[in-house]
Length: 460
RNA sequence: UCCCCAGUAGCUCAGUCGGUAGAGCAGGUGGCUGUUAACCACCGUGUCCGUGGUUCGAGUCCGCGCUGGGGAGCCA
Image (cartoon, rainbow, N blue to C red; front, top):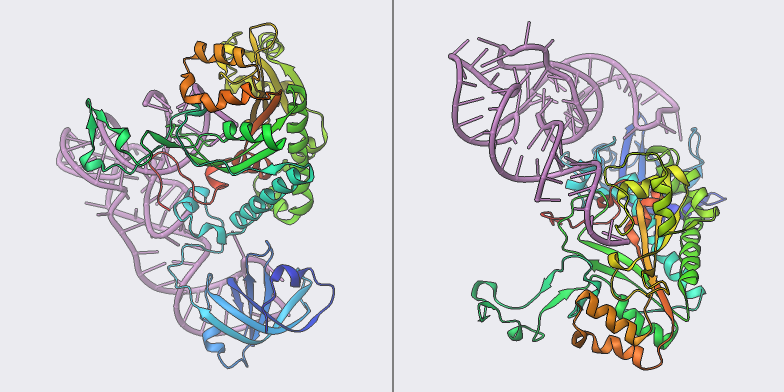
């Protein structure tokens, strides 16, 4: 008989004569005449209750089943006599697939997130992490659906790159050179002898590739892993994370902001609808205000605020910041928090930043002083999206590269796009893990990615 | 990288003024009950993160280190 998933059984309207379920035991409660077994197969948050009668031939072994053991149960699904659940399985057979000994680290009680990080290979078996990673999976699907419904093409941008896009942080070097016997040239590693004949790194952004394809396919997006070798130790940073980067031809900054807002709203509403049960766990145990936060993000209009006005608001705030608010400096965490959590109490899109604090590819505004950049800031997380209208004018781009010390010869192909049929275009990057944090209320990024990579830590 | 905090049983923690450690949960045994992270009784559990020092004596005080966490910077 074919196995049926618990998710399907629990949502059934009618009883079933014979079903087979396979999963892991969460807890067992024994009676004189029978045992209650809570079984979970990961298909949903809820477990199903199995009644194992003491007349079963292997009942003595069943009594030894501890939390974490794997079993296959064949039986009838009937209405539960007890309170607390609609259905339960009356077992005709309980086949033990494997035992989990008492050394199984997960107990039927709450563990700290810190402890669970040390057993990241087992934590998806807990309610909380199971829910988080089901939501992660649903969100990945929702992202593809969102773009596909809007005619976007999915671009696979390279993971190994020779270019240092936007100098966005430290890079991970990729090499096949023998580190114990490094070929040298003039005292330095001879990168010409390396696999690609030059220095190569893991990508920090697929943006430049995406721009090339936006100017061919119209609207594209990338969605894949990204790497930053920054030595940052915060609850919002990991060295390997996933980024969503749409790039849209014939789109200006206003269109870019509209699209970013639409996307976050869509993904929030999608999660509220499709991940209801799992979300309720977070609303109950992680962040009591989660549902009203999500409601706010899904339905309110986001504030649009030029950088200059943001600085004015902060200066008039009458609040003493640790870092002074100064036109020409980037907004600090405390400034972003003030705007999103105190002043507006909703997502804020800050745009038109001074060119001095932004990379070369952002479009220069007519004031010759600011660029068409935009950051979406959300309460609790801070920057979740960073994007811009790209500089499509060849000469302006070239002079910006000169100003910022970027060598043109490495970007000849990028400049080609401005030589041949250049058009206004825009795009942004959304941190996938930060989105999951926002939607679940989980406070640490290490808890929304299966196996987090942080400085000095890559156990799994 | 900087600042702050923490590290005691498998897990979560307590440990007073410096006198060699104890609760709950988990585990084991028995009982009871259509139970709900069940309940009751009994049983076992320690490199007190490491290292050096102060002291008659250090889980406790001091130095250094390691690990974890929070905050900042950088950013998504």
